[in-house]
Length: 147
Ligand SMILES: CC(C)(COP(=O)(O)OP(=O)(O)OC[C@H]1O[C@@H](n2cnc3c(N)ncnc32)[C@H](O)[C@@H]1OP(=O)(O)O)[C@@H](O)C(=O)NCCC(=O)NCCS
Image 1: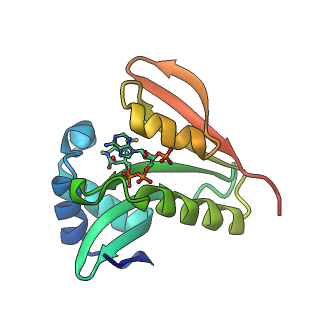
Image 2: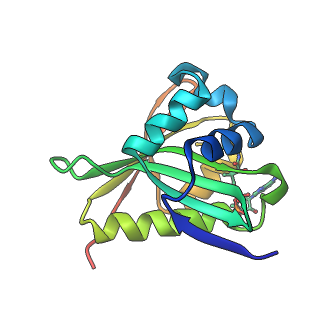
């Protein structure tokens, strides 16, 4: 299987479909309907995408637009269940870190559910450290080094 990585190419509909297929719908309930959320991503987020031919199979969406604080925020990370455990999320996160570095941002922040052990471990491997817990969420942050 050949996965290709792209930036900001998926349409709102492709993003919605991917979010639904990845079973993370419940995670964004509080942020409004999936399509509205996808629209917000298209407008404001950088979308780091993993494609298997014409299918979007992995996505990290990050806001990299706070030029005052220079802190970015990962709002969504999801991989289609048929494609998990093949380093898709790890590769996408590497692209995010590289991009944020290039933009001279100083931090990447995110929130993760404390019982999401796979995601927690993945973020820890990437140098994210827990900042505080507001049950059921853990806030994590990764400092970006120079160079
Ligand atoms: C969490 C998620 C993004 C991981 O994506 P992925 O592409 O499978 O991740 P990777 O293949 O890069 O693997 C990352 C690590 O998780 C482990 N992992 C992945 N799937 C696993 C599974 N089902 N069981 C146990 N470990 C697993 C891998 O072994 C790997 O660890 P390693 O580097 O020590 O080998 C994916 O499972 C997902 O989309 N889950 C639903 C949405 C979600 O929880 N998002 C994060 C919320 S903030």
